[in-house]
Length: 403
Image 1 (spheres, rainbow, N blue to C red):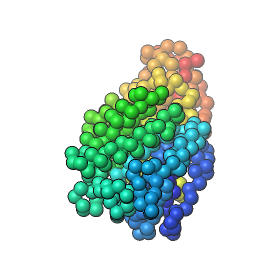
Image 2: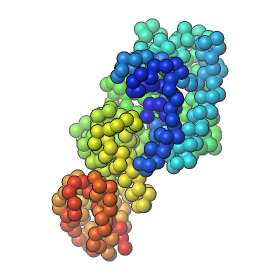
Image 3: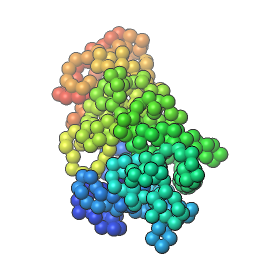
Image 4: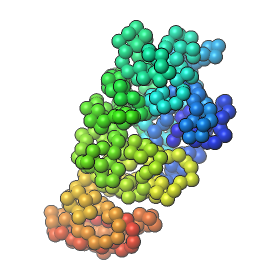
């Protein structure tokens, strides 16, 4: 959600005032809680002003991490109100059982908007003589790269000081993850790897250490770059013929925790309840890019399905379960062999579950995804391949638990 840290008018028609409309963060958390969601990306905008590509309107964003001096940023002084807001919002989310991925940098607007003219690291906008656009072309790809020049080293030192301040602000909180940059340029690889290691190094001497993630580089990025990174978690793009993170998510393509995010798979036009359950039963984490706008059916079903996987994630011994596609004819199964099974069927019909190595009697229930209701079923015995038939039209989940 693009307004959940800094107030801005993105997507909202007519929201061109400066300061921009105030975002109702409490109502936002209410909506997430009502759907049973437990993860957000806390979105950061780096420029104070840009032209909205969707509406053609000039948008503004506030607050920002640095203090102002005579209308310009002093990059050596922090704006404490920004960091107080950051901490308060992470704490408020934590009180609802919601994890927060803190976005440290934002790469899309630097590449694809006119925002650099209003960026704090553009020399007319700061009192420190800092200019991160080494090529002076108004795109400032260099801002998210390592530059072995005196100016490049000054820029990196200021970026690291900001990252340190973020870490110091939230280190004691449990519900924190870090994302280095949203959709930074493909030239940012070495810089992102450096920042991942910098976060880990900084936290190594502090009470708590939090997962650090790298998300897909746009445009032209590679999932292999994410795999090769020192990140703990990644968000890939749709991937190759094996990965297929949109329609048939691979369960063993990554050694890292995968946050399968519609933002990097489709943008604004994909993700439904079938995709959510395919993602979950392949051992991945489903993220929906939430706009908080009236939605087509597919987005409503994705919202509901993410609450469903949250409920089952709380019920089962999830840490002991792993994706076992070969155990079910559907190809979508999470299993703690001999104890618990979650099997996804994308449409009404018959399918088998291999319980040959599971002895004893198993309680059974169905989840009707579209109606969001559970239906109890007759218990079944292990020790053989068993056949099940969905008792209602549409996608279904079978939950088996040893009695």
